Image (tube, rainbow over all chains, first blue to last red; front, side, top):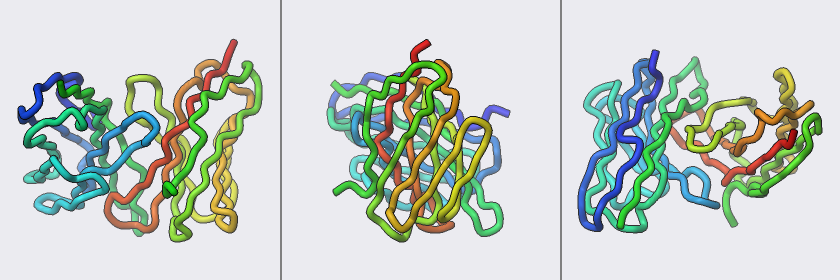
Length: 115
Length: 112
């Protein structure tokens, strides 16, 4: 059971380039989300999905796109990379247990540098 | 004012000490409270999960929630060098979506 798998682990982009951060989970979780983590800012929600075909914006969505065609995969696309997007990106998944949306399980992160 | 505040540390304690980590928050609608531990260059992992007010104990860890003061705490007894990590508090209003709100984290070092 791999849990939440993110690729790549590290990436350097030039300003203006585009790329896709991959996230896959094998726990059949309904909910998936993307966060960015910056020093002193904590984890901030970029986009999330409550199921296949359904996505919504979080706190800091600008410059990012997502789609959810399957339960397992939730890729994050950077449309035109900017230095302000230099960060560590985490994908997370969680599930509902009765009325509770339980805790998030996190991937190991993608360290992105935009130069 | 940030929705969730947390002293960033770093906090250094000797092995065996009792550690107290705290978060304050401004949104009285938060009902679910979590503590995550994050080792360097790793993803966060859940330590404790509580609903509403009260205490919850799990081994050396105790989580407390005081909703009247909008204040949550994590206590670590008999701290070990392996507890050295960043501790993130997180909270959520309801049981839908992914609307977790995280504190910035407190970096803890337990010295042997």
